[in-house]
Image 1 (cartoon, rainbow, N blue to C red):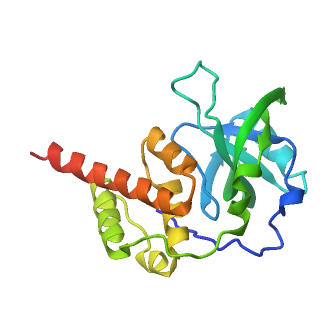
Image 2: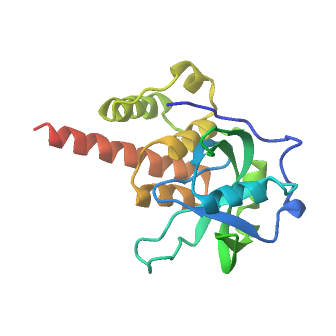
Image 3: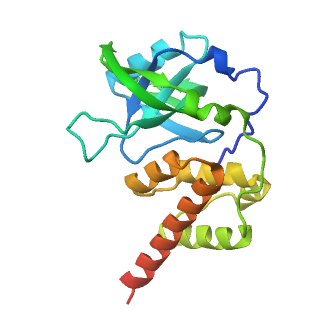
Length: 223
């Protein structure tokens, strides 16, 4: 599993609160989120999302939003909360795909959905509840990091995954939680609960709970 826990604070590439766009394209994808400071790799091949990326790259901010479909709503309904990221790496393939890295910037609530543009969906975001995402500090949010790491190792072993543990060791608590919540193959509802948690401490708590549930279910399946 590739890791890229970026410390994105104080970067010239980050928007300030007054530079956040009034509208933003969104990419609905089940069981996929991005959190502030984490890097999400994406393989873009559908024409409408190729359009989205091309149009996003023409903007000054290079941002679009990741939002999960809401399984409790109608077919096209989205969860109320998503997270916007900035295209921080980009390459084209010979078979007309785009490989990119989306660095999470700030979460948002959807105020309303606007008419589609070139086949992709556009929303009016409310950034105000999440402006603190732009100023996160490297605070300690894991009360017992060795225990969290133990649960993480168990989860990865159950899923036949591995990570660069040296890179993990160099991450702050916040980078670790946000990166793992973004990249681990968790259930859609678990990812959404982490995304919507009001503060970093609760995000860490929800992620740890998801790892422990997976450990328990894995143990039950073997007996």
